[in-house]
Structure formats: C-alpha cells, structure tokens
Length: 273
Image 1: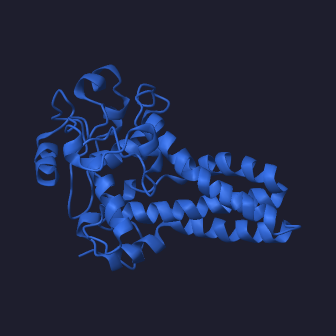
Image 2: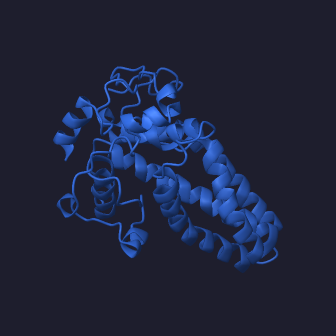
C-alpha cells in the first residue's frame, strides 16, 4: 500500500509499481508540479480572456501550440535527453541526471518521473509564447502558453499511467503504455513519443513490437557506462543516494558492468522483456 497518501510528499513511497489507479490519481492531484501547472493554466486562461479582442486569434494560438507540443517533445527527448553532451559537462551533468538518467535507472520512481519545473516551464514558454504572440498578441501568447501547460498535464498523467502497475481499459492508453515500456525496458533508441508516436513513425524510430529491434544493453543507463563514467565522472559523483522508502533501490554507480548495467538491471529486464 501507498503510505501517507493524504499527507505531504516527504516520506512517501513513490513506487508506481505498487500503486493502484485511485492512489495514483490522488497523488497526481497533490504533486507540487501538477499544482503549479494547474495554477498557471487558470492564470493563463484569465489573461487570455481579459486581453482578447476577439475569440479566433487566441483559439488559433492555443491549437497551434497543442500541435507543436508533440514535435517539440520528440526532438527534446530524442536529441537532448538521450544525447550524451549533457553528461559530458560538469555544468549540465546534474541536470541531465535529474531530468532523465534517474528516470531510466528507476522507471517507476514517481519522484523523478515528472519533469522539474525549472526545466519544463522555460521550455513550454519558449516554444508557445512566440507562436501565440505572432497570432494574437498578449491574448494569443497567454492562450498558447496555457495550451502548452494543459498538454503537459495530459502528458504527465499518461506518463504516470504508463509506469503504473495497472492495465488501463482504454485502447489508446494500452497502446502508448506498451510502446513506452518497450522504450524503457527493451530498447531506448526508439519510441520517443509519450502520448503521440506520429513523429516516431515519420522519422523511423517507431517499433510496435519488441521483437522488431534488438534488446539494448544500455536501456537503463542511456549510454553512461562505466567507461563513460571514467571519462565524465560528474553523474557518477552525483549518484550516491539510495531511495528512502519501503522499496529501496541502489542508484549508485558501484557495480556497473562494462555496458553500464548491473545484475539487478539484467534481472529486471529478463522479467519485463
């Protein structure tokens, strides 16, 4: 069972593999980042309504932002989060560790599943506000930003469901869950979408079945192997903590094989592959 479900986030168990759907829903609605997104969506909607001279421009801006979001996520996920240059710099290694490496090391830890606000909000603003402003001025910018926030809320919830020990009834959720778990437990070089895999199909990175591509030895470490840790030690230096809940899992670099995996990773992959 999930402990302290109604209390603060401190001291909670955050293992999505042990939550029910109802528990996830309650936790989702109390997560600090989600509360921030909800607050910003209300404020953005208010600014859009207050400053709009007509309905059409902010509406178009919101639709455009919603269409741009999946492509933006695909490009960031594939080329930034799965790139190697962030861990090669002391200045960005800790950020890369937090926003994606930790998530692949422990895919069911809710605490590192959500994007950090200091990285997600500037990205949403950078992508949506200029488009919205060009279409509808202040009202368009507010509407586009709000659209990006709402898309993020939907994306984050679906992402949680994908890692939850629960098979949803929706065919849409079943499909995106299957594709995303393959990305995490079989081969991380494909299936970069979360809620939309159209760009994966267009760019040739979609695989519908695990048997279509070979199993990747770096699926849990994104290429940050023992050899890479020797050359670029900063992520390893930041990775000495343990999960502090009822399902502790070692996150430290000790025990890495040459391909960067651990015995525990191999056992988990055998169970889920």
